[in-house]
Image 1 (cartoon, rainbow, N blue to C red):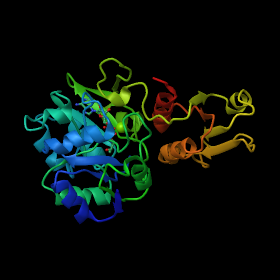
Image 2: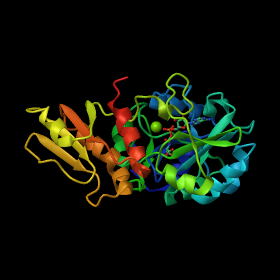
Image 3: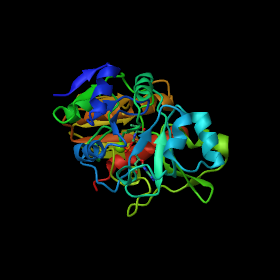
Length: 320
Ligand code: TXA
Ligand code: MG
């Protein structure tokens, strides 16, 4: 039975025993374990049913700890870390020899970030090891943004979820790597490309590579509900094609004309992309629990976090 609690001390004890704790971050909940404990890291992969070629993100409590994890910090990486940490940016950098291969799936690089959640920052400060934490969901399913989402997934397989409330950003971190000194976008996420480019100039975008994923957040099917989901540029007309079906709608600001066969999730009444990102996964979880015939999501505006939302929605539409 999973325990939902706000006790940092309890979380610390469990992690020090080499067990896993689900932790809140400002993006999504993570399934955390001691990066230096091989059995804890193996448990992360087993519990999530995650393929071992998919490396994990290391979570540290401050930029000062970065030098314990990586061997080299390019100037642009240093600037990004200083600007955005604690926050929803993951940097992929050359790893130190002391970082276990299990964490990095044998790569010579490691993904690292300082999350921005008071409970998790306090927990990390209390530990003498960093935490590896992939999103706390079974591989390929919708990421969790509340302690309840985590409990529903891992009721019998995880000991504790540290309850930090609903995640403020609600979508995974943006991942940036460096190749030949150039900054490359590996995964769209909670910090927009526009915000990053405002700090370091143009980013190279490398987002589709299904066979040898740099960041398997890039595998086509990911973040997916059980219910079939499709994307539409025109909700009204797509809805008409599914007459007499039980439909779930995900729309940005405005709703379609509701009818009794339809459940509508409006992600931001006021038209804020930030608010919409925050609400996206919770809306997907709710709709996925309703036994609908189909979920129809509208395309979001192609700027700022609209691009990150479209990325997650379009991955959710893929059947394989
Ligand atoms: O917001 C987040 O990043 C959340 C919270 C819990 O921090 N974590 C998260 O982890 O989304 P996960 O495991 O679901 O996604 C980690 C992504 C994967 O797509 C993985 O392939 C990529 O990071 N990654 C990790 N190490 C990498 C490396 N060395 N090179 C390229 N990509 C890497
Ligand atoms: Mg994930």
